[in-house]
Length: 303
Image (tube, rainbow, N blue to C red; front, side, top):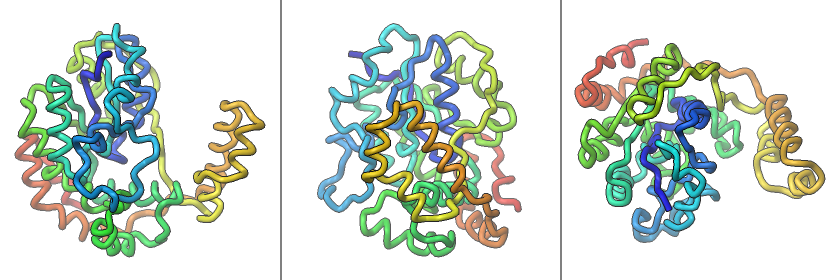
């Protein structure tokens, strides 16, 4: 049973969902039907001792190797086989995750998308609000709560920590040769998606393909109008079970999507002063990152 030969490692809220769906359309690429198995972060070799304190581990995370292999059982004939788990490039023991990938798929090619870290943090906050996982309606209060949440073992809400890209990427560069890693910027993906895809196709050794609507945004985040309604829409409950029993999957997904859209409030803008303070906190990490990547990132430190 084959394993993936490439992995989108992150980061979350940087365009990885759109990239996953675009790569899935390529005839020579097979993508795991479970977009985010998170296997290398939560497999038995990766989980730290005393994992009972960890909270909010996603229910669809794959922790068994045989179950993980089953995700790729339909793609052995494809040139490239991949998955996309943005959690790999987070502040949750990235050195252990990198070592797990190196041990089990040492020749895998790694792809990362990075976004201005303050903007990424705010987008992650809005996304968790949209899903009903973030009870605090104020971004500054959520940032203030982050240290205690991390200490308590919560895996959601690492808004500031997941934006230290140099610290979180360095373990991968320590273990994998540079020729096996590609790092792209979110702004490049937004402005020139076809160019980014063409480079990824060459990186993966597949034929370059013209994919229409390459710049289409996926997984756009906005806060809910009503937090209780949002939790009702996204959390398991009796109403959802009844709908599941009564309607085909296509209709269920359509109705759920429409309900979430109707409950979506206009996306509020990040306070420029808060963005400036948050960005300044990333200064040293950004300067190290631009040396690692050989690319000027000074615009991330400007308003």
